[in-house]
Structures are given as C-alpha cells and as structure tokens.
Image 1 (tube, rainbow, N blue to C red):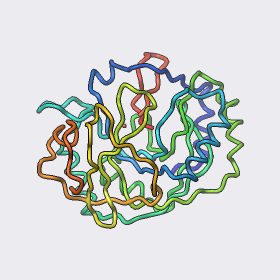
Image 2: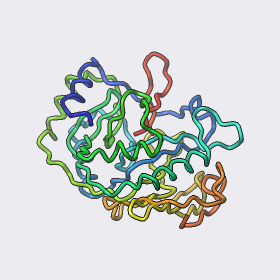
Image 3: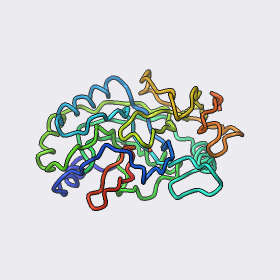
Length: 287
C-alpha cells in the first residue's frame, strides 16, 4: 500500500492539476449507455461527513455536480458487450463467471480498512485508504485486476471530487493540511458490489447491480425495476459500512441480457473522465 508521504510527493511532482471537463464524452462511450466496475460501497454517515469536510477544504477548486457516493474502486469491468464480438473496453458473462469462481475458491474473509486524510491524483483529490492486511490486493487478484492500472499502480482511494481547472499543486496541497490530523475512520468490509454509472454523466451517481457477500460466498442480484437506462435502484446508504459478498451466477446471466437490458433480475442469484491536456480525450480512471 502506497504511504501518504509518497502520494504527496507524486502529486507535487506535477506543477498543475489536470482540468476536468463537464461534457458528454461520446468519443469514449460511442453511445454505450453504462460502464460497470467492482467497488466497495463505503457510503456511511461518518465517511460522508469526512468527504464533505474535504470538499469544504478545497472550496472553489472542484468541478460542480460530483454526485458519486463514497466508494473504493477495486476493478474496472467496462461496457457490457451487446454482441459476440467484444471491443477492448467491453466485457461479457465470461469475465463475471471467472471472477466469481476466483472469489469462491480463495474465499477472502471480511476485513477492516481505515479511511484517512486528503491526498490527490493530478486529476482528483481523495481520502487515503489504509489496508494493513493486504485484503484489497487479494480481492483484486480474484477480480483479475492485479495488472497495471490505466494511470499507473493501483492506489485505493475514496474520491472527493474533480479539479475544475489546472491549479498549482503546491497551493492545492496546502489545503490538505485541514485533514492532516484526522484520525482513521474504521470501516468493516463484508461485501463488494458490482456497480455502474451512466457513461454520459461525468461524476454522476453510481447504481448497484449486485453484491457479493464474503461470508456466504454468494452473489445477490438487486432487482432492476426500470432498467439501467431510466430509474435504477440507487443505494441510499443504509448500513453501508457493514459490507458483504457471495457467489452463484444465474444460468441466464448472458452478456447484456437480464442484468443489463432492463429486465427484472432475480434477487438471489467504472467513473468520471478527466481531460488529457495533450489530446482533449478523457482518461480511463474510474473514481
């Protein structure tokens, strides 16, 4: 796990933050409506309060309208494939099947995380995550996400927002001191969640398709009432810091069918985009 001092040094090595842009990145999603990822839902009152405190410390620097619930991204899945030929950034049921098989075989137990103070990528500030047992690395191996992250090595984090402009990093980092003495917030993790977001909405809310409960080793699908294109069931934050995961892939879970096409799924069975200054294209970090 990367220590806060190293994270701070990396941030300060860049002269300016990356400016984020609020627009529909059609050249990225190409009309595909939803992007999916595995994450830990940590949307609890104490953590929401710390995110709000961090946002206050960075007042005036962040892009308006960041609505993502507090979460820790574990692995990106991509866009659900709609046909037999998958694009490089798409996935089908074979990926989910392999991930669930690995989770069941390795049977990782529930674990504790600590949520700390402010650090930052060049594009987005975040709360640091402390994992003393290496549990996140185990989960990422199960999810076949132990390779290179799109923007470098994996850093567990809870995103606070997105930078609105190219601010001098030295000036931004001085604001991090407001949370330097914040104690670690303990968070017990008992599940991981298959989550997604509307690809055209930068910083929009996450929805949850399914939860894998660690103790029972069972995947539980959430009911999709009106499909992903309209109103989806959004997690309201009840009991979120007591998370859980489990397996049992439904036989009719075929790429982009019941889970992705808006059909009700049985109940038991990635991200904002940053603009690269050189190209004007969004990056692939999901936060």
